[in-house]
Image (cartoon, rainbow, N blue to C red; front, side):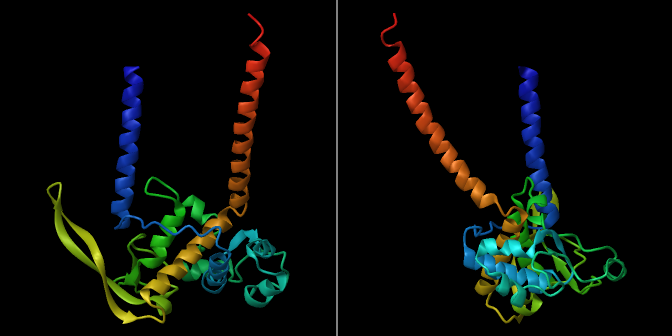
Length: 254
């Protein structure tokens, strides 16, 4: 029993250490993303942002365009507004860029984003929180080849695809002592150049995009939750009925 307690305590401490290490490695703690997988208007806006800004380089090869009808879009709307690399609404969301050229330009092929919201889940928080934080923490860094860096993903290889919407910012750090060492603690942002969106509008748009990517990683999640609720209700009612039947059966038996 003592060994089990020691193992359990070690496991909990390891999780805490990993969470702290990830937050420190990413520069900041993850912001909580708004829950939007049931908001059709937000999902539609997220799908529009994804098709216009992400599908230029990244694919979503495990998602078909016609699955977007689940978030309230018609096939004609999908064809007119979201399809740029194919003519068939039943095709998967593959990028038009040649993989060989992508490797030459970026050093490696940009990752597929279909399951990114799930694959980025970890001790620091769910994947949608990581995406929401990542999309909003780009900043100018002239020491990098792309001219950009990211607090959630330091030394990121991708430039900020939303810089025109967000504008240009620089992070504000404060030097503090932690465990006898000087560390740079993130304190906020200084706007260098305003974007076409206000900070609130941009945060809402990135929330829509992160929500769409969370939905895309598991389109059936809302149905799964809804069915799960009904199953639990059924089991609760059945348990009550079984309890009363058991009592009725045994009441005359001594």
